[in-house]
Amino acid sequence: MPVYEYECGTCGGRFEVLQKFSDPEVSVCKLCNASPVTKLLSPTAFVLKGSGWYATDYPSEKRKKAMESEKPAAEPATSTAGCSAGTCGSDSCPSKS
Image (spheres, rainbow, N blue to C red):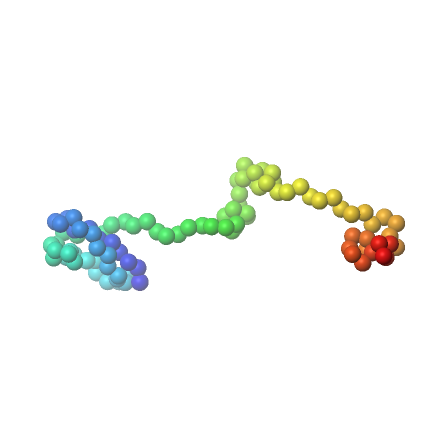
C-alpha cells in the first residue's frame, strides 16, 4: 500500500497515511482534527544505477563516442606462428618446455 503525505491548512502540520488506492482521501488533520487538508506530491525513491539498458542499449551518439573512448586499449596478441601444437599462447607450449 502506498504512503501519502498530507498537509493541514489550519496548523500547517504534515503527516503520512498508509492507505489503499480505493480508500477515500483524508479530510481531517491527524494532528489537530481540523478539516482543510491537502494531499502533497512527494518525490519517489526510484534511482537508476549501474549499466542497464538505458545506458548501454539506447545511448545518444555523443554517449556512444564517450563509451568507445573509455575502453582500454587491446593487448597485442601472442604469435603462434611456427607452433605445430597451436598452443603457444598458453603455458602448455611444447617449445617452452
